[in-house]
Length: 143
Image (cartoon, rainbow, N blue to C red; front, side):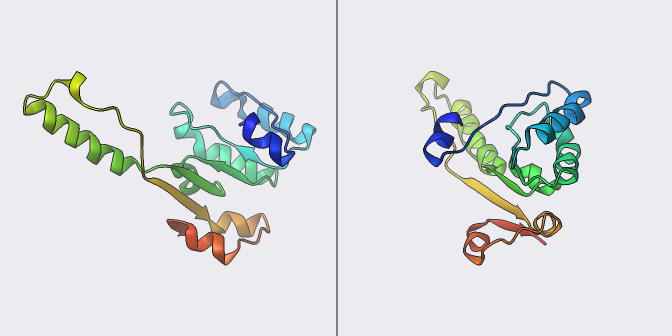
């Protein structure tokens, strides 16, 4: 993330929270640092807490982005792999193995389908305008 931010003259400040009990402290630290937005890294451990994280971001008036499910939980933007597409592809590999193909002979694949979800409810609460061009590119818009 640091490498992507540098050419845009953006400063990335990493704030760590190891468990839900540390979220409030992490957001207090971000408020003191006067950050402009929050990126919630895709960590399965925090998925059950997406709603709490989105609520804290909203309370601090911070736009936030996370995994696809994060937007459903109240975050501004969700972006990530299409889980259903991954499951379908996994079924293909299971089928091949059951038909006798050795797992070592199967190719390693990277996800090819990603989703962009925009939560307009959150955008309105944050008083952010979303361009029509951006919204048209979204796979789903939460109104």
